[in-house]
Image (tube, rainbow, N blue to C red; front, side):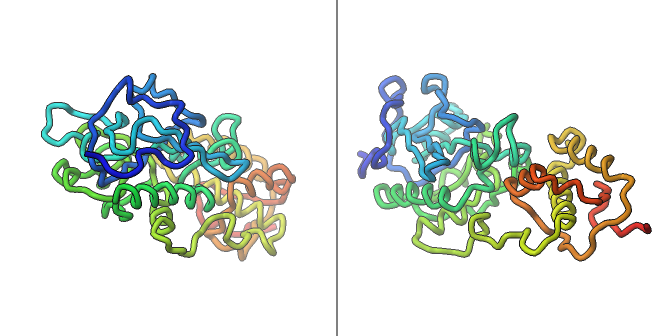
Length: 316
């Protein structure tokens, strides 16, 4: 018999699927976090592949919209579930949450004409307000259902390294005993998805426990452009682009930013000097990169070889 509130306070019940696909009532003790790899509330094929809950970021208002699809203690349908095994994935006292957005680094800055952080969420770079909002949901799961506010000891790998049979994937007996929080990347027995990538679940769980760790949210950290010249910013921006391409080296040639980097290198090919003294690991947020292009900063006289991390100045 299930105990505790079955629906998060204020959640929309307009997209419930339990009357169409009633699941097994269970006492949940773990939660699986997914990312939808989309930008809006999915229809889950009418509920065929729905989780217990979908969380949709309301970016302009810095809040979340919560949609309940199944009661908290009812088995949902977002995992590959092999009916021929003794331990079922969807039915292993498991609660499931889909976060609308992406964990794919190819979408870190943009997704077609959409902009990360403005039109959708790239979850590994999720702003602090959103991590705290998700933490409130996990705190509710803990209060109402006793789901431990601890993470799997397995790593939260960046996508696409999290896909398939990675070191993050649990064995079936490990999954059967697991209590706490994990991602789709951790679930075994036919599940190969790599979501939610390296989303900062360490911070989410810390906030849910009432802790207030130092974050590296772009909203809170020191502006990396403070005190830099336009040439400095151009150099740092190109470095960031190179880093983004190298996150998936096997596909660097087809990375969405590859053409941008090649074009910039060609544009600056004939120029004479590189700026020295900039921290090699200088990073800009996607918004700052966009601003750099918009403001014409990249008209600076800079020459960068995308295959060299620490370029040296050229003679005049």
